[in-house]
Each structure stands twice: as C-alpha cells, then as structure tokens.
Length: 254
Ligand code: G
Ligand code: G
Ligand code: MN
Ligand code: NA
Image (tube, rainbow, N blue to C red; front, side):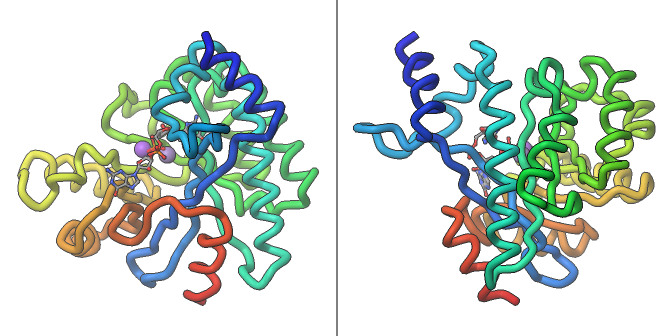
C-alpha cells in the first residue's frame, strides 16, 4: 500500500524515467534501435528497477496510466534524438497485458506520435503472448490499425507464453523476440538450442524478423549469427543506458 502511494506520487512528481538498451543488427554489426526500460528515481532510495514495482503497477491498474506515459516519453526521446546529432533511432516500448486489454493503445500511440511529430516507423511495441491471446480476434483489429499507422509490433518473451500458431500467422506483427530462457544456455544445452533454432526458422518462414534477448557472451552471439538470427540485445553489447549515453553510443557508431 505504501508502495502504491509512493508510485502515485512518482507519476505526479516525474520520478519515472526510461533507460535504453541497444539492439544490434547481426548482418551490419550496427545498432538497429533500442528498447526503452522503465526506472524509478525514488527519493532517498536511488534507482529502483521494474521487478520491484511493475507488479504493483499491474495489480493496481496504475500500469494503464504509466503505460501511456511511457509511450509519450519514448516518443519525446525519439523526437529529441532525431533533431540532434544522434539522428533517427527506432525505440521499442513494452506494453503490459493490462494496458493492452484495458487501455486505448491505438489512441495513446496516435496522440504521442502527433504530439512529438514522430515518424511512426521509429516506434515499436513489444507485446506478450498473454496480452495478444487474451482476446485474439480483437488483437487482430488493433494490430491491423497499428500496422496501417506504420508502427512496428513484436512479440516479447516468445516461447514462454501460450501463442496459438494459427493466430501467429494471422497477427500482423513484424518480429519475434526469443526469450532469454532459451538464450542463456544456447551453446551448451541442445534442447534450448533446438527451440531457439525452431523459433528463428518459423519466424523467417512467416516473413518475420527475429531478435534474441539476454545475449551475454561472444559464443552466444556467434551461434545466433551463424544460425541467421537477425538481431541481438543483451549485456554482451550493452546494459540499459541513460538516454544521453545511448545517444552517444549511436552517434559514435555512425
Ligand atoms: O530493465 P529490467 O531488466 O529490470 O526489466 C525487468 C522487467 O520489467 C522487464 O522484463 C519488463 O517485463 C518489465 N518492464 C521494464 N520496463 C517496462 C516498461 O516500460 N513497461 C512494462 N510494462 N514493463 C516493463
Ligand atoms: O521483459 P523484457 O524482455 O521486456 O525485459 C528485458 C529484460 O531483460 C530487461 O529487464 C533487461 O534489463 C534484461 N536484460 C537485458 N539484457 C540482459 C542480459 O544480457 N542478461 C540478463 N540476465 N538480463 C538482460
Ligand atoms: Mn521487452
Ligand atoms: Na523479454
């Protein structure tokens, strides 16, 4: 309860902020974009990580408001980079299940893109299988309108939820994100490797791009590159960074 009150205050007092973790294109070796990750600069506590407060946001429904704030903040950052020496950066935001089901995702996205004059192609939404499958027929409509708008959508934590393969084919998405659970031991555990390879193969058969998250070592990276994974994200390349450091990294890599 204290945490809930503190979080309501955090929203009003602007204590929430976004960090950015780069994604790397394995064909070009260049940064292809970034995932925005929520942080809370809590007075007297320091920087608080989402594991400690996103569950409270979810349980209280506050995530619907925070989710709209995240989309707006990401678009503001995209616009700031586009105007600066950094240039255009594709930013992916995580959409929680409750935000997708109870919020007006399409309206929030349209409003944020317009407010900050952001080209829709620079915004990506990471959705979970659970969110997408909770009302699959409605999901198709929402995704179709987002696609028409020009926004990219990907399925986060892929392989850990309950996607129906029949729907996977009907959802107009752009990318699958292989869950860290299959990446961690990809070079030593044949079962994890088999699942990761199956996801890569299925994604490409469906004309989707595929990214692996949680890449921490060079052997993991090389294995994924050899097996035609399109992109990676993880501590091996970079931890999530404050916006200015992310901007410097992109600028230095051009
Ligand atoms: O950045 P970190 O590794 O601490 O993130 C932990 C988890 O918190 C992520 O896997 C994600 O599920 C969740 N999370 C982080 N940022 C966001 C966000 O902006 N929105 C939502 N809904 N969840 C987030
Ligand atoms: O749930 P989601 O996939 O959106 O969140 C990704 C989470 O994974 C973030 O919390 C991020 O900090 C974390 N993460 C990113 N790269 C790595 C990594 O290389 N190793 C580990 N263990 N976690 C990572
Ligand atoms: Mn994600
Ligand atoms: Na994930």
